[in-house]
Image (cartoon, rainbow, N blue to C red; front, side, top):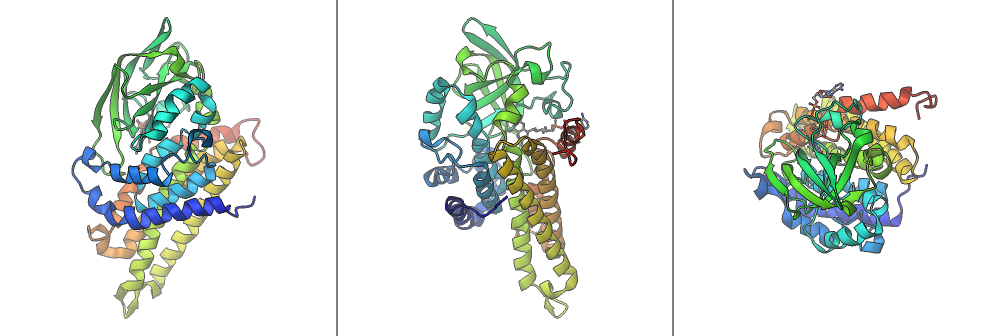
Length: 401
Ligand SMILES: Cc1cc2nc3c(=O)[nH]c(=O)nc-3n(C[C@H](O)[C@H](O)[C@H](O)COP(=O)(O)OP(=O)(O)OC[C@H]3O[C@@H](n4cnc5c(N)ncnc54)[C@H](O)[C@@H]3O)c2cc1C
C-alpha cells in the first residue's frame, strides 16, 4: 500500500484544516455551551462548508459534487473534528450516503433527490435505524425476527405506508432527506426483511419530534422523529425490498472508517492542546513538557493516535478498492480510534491538571465529545462481537482477513 496522498487529497486536507483552525475552533467552545440544541446548530458553518465544497464531498461529480474517495473523506473528517466533533459528524452523515447516492439509487431517484440536495446549502442527510426498542439489535449481531424493531412499511398499490418512531438519529429533525429503515416483512429477521426508504422531511406523515439534549457532540443534533401513516411512492424504495442484508456491506463501505477518522480528530485536538500547554506551563523549575512523566504521556498519545490513523487509512484504502476485509477492519478501526481518542483526552486532562476541567480550556469538551463514539455507530462491544464473528468464520483467512 502506498499512502502518499494525491495532490487533490492534500488540497482537501489543507482546506479543511484551515476552515477548522480559523473558523470552527475559535468559536466551538462558546457554541458548545449554548443551552438550546436548536440554537447550537451551526447553519453558518454548514453554509460555509457548502461554499468550500465540503458538504457535497460525497456527491458524484456528475451531479455537481466532489465525488472523492473514502480516504479523502477520512482526511477531511479528521481535520473538521479537530475543530469540533459535532460539526464533523453533521458533514459525515452527508458523506456516508456517498455510495448510496452513486450506486444504490436508481437513475430516477438520483434525478429526484440529488439536485435539490446539491442546490440547498443547508441540506443534510440522516439515516434512521435506531428505535426505542432496538439500539444494538439493529446492528445485525443478534439478527432475529423477535427484536423489538417496530417501524413497518406496508405496500398499498403503488405506495408504501410507513409507521414508526426513530430516535437518537444524527442530523435527525434538522435534515431535509432521510433514509428510513423499516420492516417490510416482519416474519423475517431485520437483515432479511428490512428495507430502506428515501423520505424527504416534507412528506405528509413525517413529523419531527425533538432534539435530544446531551453532553457530547453538542453542535450536532440527535433527533427523535415519527412516521405516521407516511405514504411514500414505491419508487422511493432503495435497492428493492430486503436491502438491509446488503446495506452496510455494499453501500456504506466507508462508514466505519469515516466515523473512526472523526473521533480520531478529537484525540488529535487533545494531543495538540496538551503539547501546547505543556510547553507553556512551568512547574518544578521548567516547562512541564520537560518533566519526564508528562513527556511520556505525550509520547504515548502520539504513538497511539498515529497507529489508529494508519489503521483507518488502511481500512479506507481497502474500502475504496471494494475489498471485503474492509468490513471487519472497519469495525476494529472504529473501536480502536474511539478508545484511542478517549484515552488521549484522558491523558490530556492529566497533563493539564486542575485546568483540565476549567472552561478556559477545551479539554473537558474534548473528553465529553470523545465519549460519544464509544457507543455511537454501534457500541464498541457490538462492533467487536461482529468483528470476532467474521474473524471466526470458516472462510476467514489465517488472520481473519
Ligand atoms: C452520538 C450518537 C449518534 C447516533 N447516530 C445515529 C444515527 O445517525 N442513526 C441511528 O439510527 N442511530 C444513531 N445512534 C444510535 C446508536 O446506533 C445506538 O445508540 C447504538 O447502536 C446502541 O444502542 P443503544 O444506545 O440502544 O444501547 P443498547 O443496545 O441498549 O446497549 C446497551 C449495552 O448492552 C450491550 N449489548 C446490547 N446488545 C448486546 C448483545 N447482543 N450482546 C452483548 N452486549 C450487548 C451494548 O454493547 C451496551 O454495552 C446514535 C447514537 C449516538 C450516541
